[in-house]
Length: 462
Ligand code: C2O
Ligand code: CU
Image 1 (tube, rainbow, N blue to C red):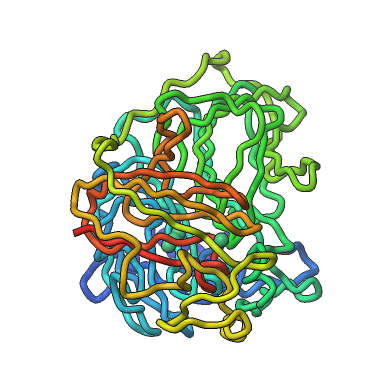
Image 2: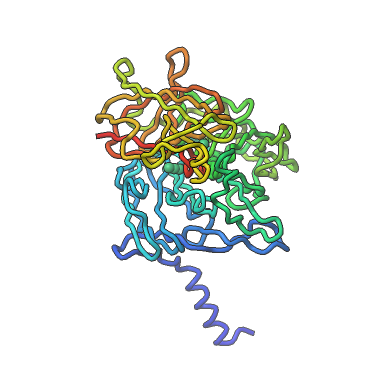
């Protein structure tokens, strides 16, 4: 029987359900983004939940989605036990909003707030993440997707944002390994996890229909893991890399390699039959394992479509002035099995032994970490051609803030626009970009333990 009291309670519950909670607002009335510890279920029970750090109590943080050219405003509130900041990875942003403590803003202390306010000029798949003590803060879960929508949506049935990460968990307790300064990780391949997840789930499964066309937005948020991916039960095309549309989308035939920080947008058609499953497959030690399962139930009403059209290009994307480009060179040195006998640290030449004691292992052009002098001083509009030599035994994912570059390929052609370049040991690669965004821009390895132990420099555009 529904008495008056039950009825009234029901009404209250309904009213509450029908009323979306107003977003929290900061002191300036702007919607907040709060970093704080939270607990999520990473490992299956009977493991306990894992203590992570997230934004707005979620890990990954809330998906921020906006129209191309829209203004983004977030008042970042730090409720962590240490200083933090937010970097909007891949956005050609106003330098003051880039979120790099010591270079573009002071770190936001616990209890403090910082107003981020910028315009997102390019459509595509981006992400945001903590940029202070990043090895620790990103490993603890401080990241989320930042999606900028094209004004004309591509012809797809639906889309899924897939954030790939690995976690280094204590196998007994499923809690995050708190040794973020491990000498071994720093001097080798970086902090690699023992527990792999997508959107915080090890068993992510998304129901699909045969012939359904999906856009998969893949983001590698791992500290150091390189994801080698392929598709099964789906035909796919790569339509964008690091947010930027490819003029000529190519089929995913072999593998797709995503270094830390990199993104890829795929358009995929489900070919697996009802009752079967398609998979995003991760290849590890030459074995394919399911990263995300797509069980197929039923058939989509529409028939299969042909190859997808390219996404609309983003504005002011071209590289001119290559003939009169300024050139610079970056030698990456150090690490285990490397040849770094001595390097400059804090303005002084240090022996290998002293560097090990300082837990610093990597150098750019003989110097470890940030200095007062940028790698290059560029005038606005100048084109830089940067030759990078990876004289180490490890891969590195070099990320440029604030601008996208293209790789200069052997035949004087130019590769796709990217913001992160994955380089394997011994490789020499050349990138070029137009320095059209004024400010101080970081250029660092996105294997975050490497960035922390030397692989960090910057460029000035003025
Ligand atoms: Cu995604 Cu400097 O970082
Ligand atoms: Cu590196």
